[in-house]
Image (tube, rainbow, N blue to C red):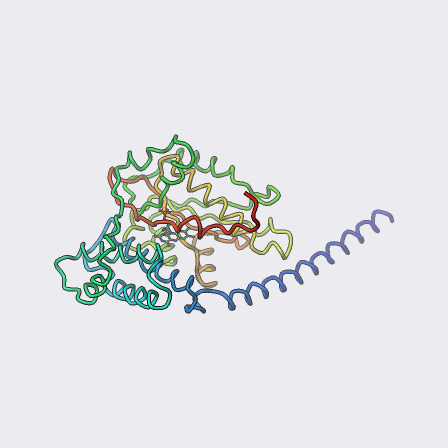
Length: 328
Ligand SMILES: Cc1cc2nc3c(=O)[nH]c(=O)nc-3n(C[C@H](O)[C@H](O)[C@H](O)COP(=O)(O)O)c2cc1C
C-alpha cells in the first residue's frame, strides 16, 4: 500500500514536471523567436553591425576562392562587384574607418591582382578610390610550418590553428581517436557530456551530405573523413536549457578543432544552418537518431606539403570586450 502511494506520488511529480518543462519551452522558444525577429541582422541591414557582417561574409567568399585547391580564374566576378557596392554604401553611411571593411577592400585588390589579364572596369574604379589599401595577403605555408606550434605555449598554438581546405591523405583512425580523446576533455553543463561524434569515411555519403550542406564547393571532394558532431537532447532537462545542445556541442567542437590541430589533422568546420527538411534528410541519410541535434560538420584530412590558408583577420580587442565598471 505504502509502495503504491509512493509510486503514485512519483508519477504525479513527473507529470507535473513535464507540464512545467513544456510551458517553459513554449515561453522560451517564443522569446527566442521574438528576439530573432527584432534583432537578426538579415532583417535589419540598416544597422552598422549587420552591414559589416554582410561585407565580412562577402570578402570571406572571395578569400576562400583565393586560397582554394581547385581554383579556376574568373570565380566570383559578380560577388566581387557586389562586395564593392556594399563597401561603397557602408562607407557613405558609417565612414571608412573600419578594420574589417578595409580588409574587404584589400581582398578585392588581391582578387583584382589575380585577374590582371581580365578587364574589370567597375572594380578598377572602386579600387582607385582606395589607393592606400594594399592587397590582402593569404598565407601560403608548408605543412611543417602550419603544425610547428604544436608544443608552443597556448597563445602561439591557438593562433596557429586555422581551418584548412586542402586535404591530400587519409587520417589514420588512431590519430583521430587520439584527437577525440583530447576533445572529450571539453567541459559541459553538470558534466552531462551531450556531444557525440559520428565519423564517416564513405566518399559517396560525404558527397551527398556536402550537397545538402552547401559550404564545401571546390574542396569537399578531397576530404577524407567527415565528422558530424551532435548533441543529445535526452541530456537536456529544462525548457530554459533550450540552447544546451548548441552551447555544449559548440564548446566540444572548439576543443575538437584544437585537438585535431594538435594531432596534425587539417580540419574545416562546416555550418549546419539548414532548413528543418534538410536536417531531417541528413538524419535519415546518416542514420543519426532523431534525439541527436546536429551541431556541426567537420571535414578533415592530412594536408599536402604546401597549401594556402585564408587570412580571416580578427576584429580588434576593443570590439570583443565591453568592460563594465571601473576596477582595474
Ligand atoms: C560555425 C562555423 C561554420 C562554418 N562554416 C563553413 C562552411 O560551411 N564552409 C567553409 O568553407 N568554412 C566554414 N567555416 C570556417 C570559417 O570560415 C573559418 O573558421 C573562419 O573564417 C575563421 O578562420 P580560421 O578558422 O582559419 O581562423 C565555418 C566556421 C564556423 C565556426
